[in-house]
Image 1 (tube, one colour):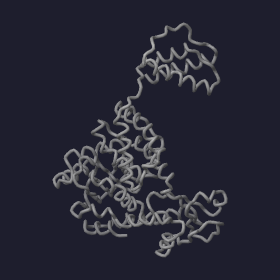
Image 2 (tube, rainbow, N blue to C red):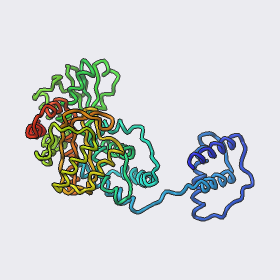
Image 3 (spheres, rainbow, N blue to C red):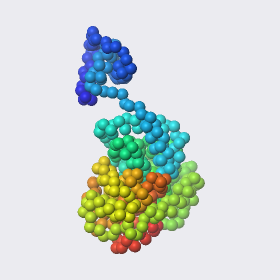
Image 4 (cartoon, rainbow, N blue to C red):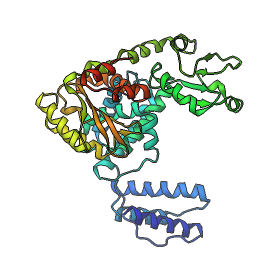
Length: 425
């Protein structure tokens, strides 16, 4: 139907552009339903007319509106549940990310415009691809997964399953709101050797600064082409002088003294101190137990791992039996594996009785979705602990982003050793 209307519309616009209009079409009686289609036809033709410079007639409008009706187009349903979900989503994501979005009217308006058609698309299995999904998952993985965990609570109520493309769209809105609130700072890393040295430095700095910060890398020659006023903090491995900007000089290996200089920099707002505290506080450890750490297992597929670990969680009453299926369904909608050889699967919090994070270190890497993994963090967050979501995920991503910490976990030979290393700085 969509393809047919598109063909009809293109031909109609082409003919009208050439001066050929629809003639003597029988006008139907106006009612509430037909008014919607006539208004829709006017909007379509008006936008085309503005762009292409032609004029159209009432008969052209009437013809297009009848085609919309014939091809079973219909107005999107306006349900009260949509506005309720927007309010609840704002509240739950605010709690989970520890950021108050209540005063951001632009975000609320964007969500009210986006969520009703999103629900309609999902209910009718009309998949809309987001070309930036992979990039968003990698760059804003914390925000992306927090939103997915929160939204999973509404799947049963709405009778649908969210997919990663739709979550990526929502992540873009929330990430823009975070930037408007200036809760994420833009940090520039200047390295004499450029990219190679900077990767190590960025990974170490991520363990010191909040996960919402964004990083860019530049070599000294690139500085002349950049607008340095856009950056909240500049960290450099070589001595450089930038007027009206504090430059924090550090070693490429980031010593303890360097870390202290970054923490006490004037570029770091006092309001961020609390955030720094929770990054170092290891909230993750509150929800990890030694008896649910698996070392040197022989899993060969994600299905096998989710089935066996899920069975153990059911036996211990951490989750209800339906939880396993929601984890598998979540994986079908988009893999949770990462290039670092790790995976962070999670299921619907509705079926979690008590929050627990299961850690699995497999003997050998096996293909999860796109990548081969050997370290898995199975996330089970109960509804009453949603406000802990950001803290937990932030700790997990701080581990995942640190190659040295990952190596220590992979070298662990007992669950006691792995438990100790998860909690170490």
